[in-house]
Length: 193
Image 1 (cartoon, helix red, strand yellow):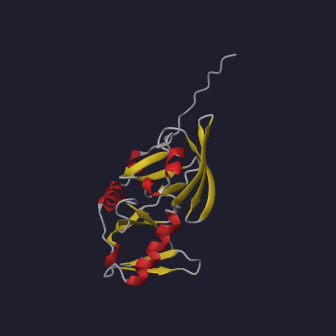
Image 2: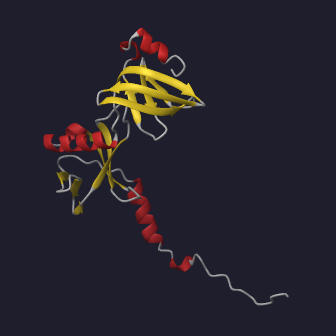
């Protein structure tokens, strides 16, 4: 049986309803870089331990701290963003020293939480099986076992003898100086570095 009824497609985008001025204003806000410093921003800690911000006539109950250059310049060009899923940028701290000492410490605390990266001090064992590497290491936070993919970008050279190791869950570990390890430890890493 053939159905001869006509269906009307709903109008998903009504061009008359688009507010061009609002879109233009939002675009300008996104492209504008706002530098935050001790003259125009006040950071505070909330009761729950989060970071709050007051800048101009706006107050944010909770903000996120993101490093633009986390490995090379962790105290410069720090992005402060809204805490929702969009993480819209509120402003940029050009240099952490542009803030008061107590605010600097609050920012550093948030950075340590977001960019937690234990330092590998000793390599007890590394085995590879079925395309994975199984690590047993001693870090500055104690003994740790984790798994990485073989090959790819699980182990990244950060320059000189410094490496970053990322496990299959996205956790990062720093190996600050390969040559600070013993010869036997370095031999265990031959396949991976």
